[in-house]
Length: 188
Image (cartoon, rainbow, N blue to C red):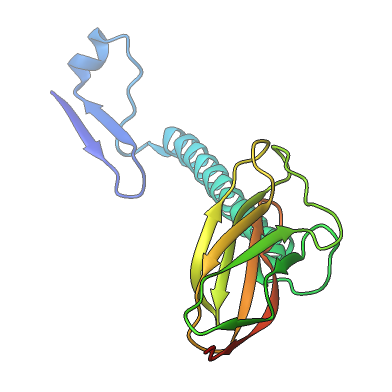
């Protein structure tokens, strides 16, 4: 009679057999009383596999965590805060009248680059240009690299004096913005 038993501590199976089966079998059979060699070998093997697996898992967890911290500090930090300081090629230039009538339509032209026009290459271009009235977006234009110059004209009307804000989003840094005060007067 052949009997198969399973040990609780590992996935090790032990076969016990009667003497008549042992004589006719050419298979190595370990009895339950003497599983030590096989059990120890398997236990070491599983321990090594488990230790190696845990090491690999630890490395796979650590890599994204460290990479995420570096990304947050170096890359996202660049994209987090809207830039307001002057930059020759990134500061939006707002061209419009300083004074307009209530409800009167007028053009606002925004060119990216107060000193020189921003490049428009596949690797370095302006994604969009938007215009805001007191931090509320009123218009936005999306641009394509190569085919569009980073310059737009919006036709708007205002009911009250306000601060117009032009914002641009390049593909490689945080948005840049500039503002201009517009006085709205009653015209007769």
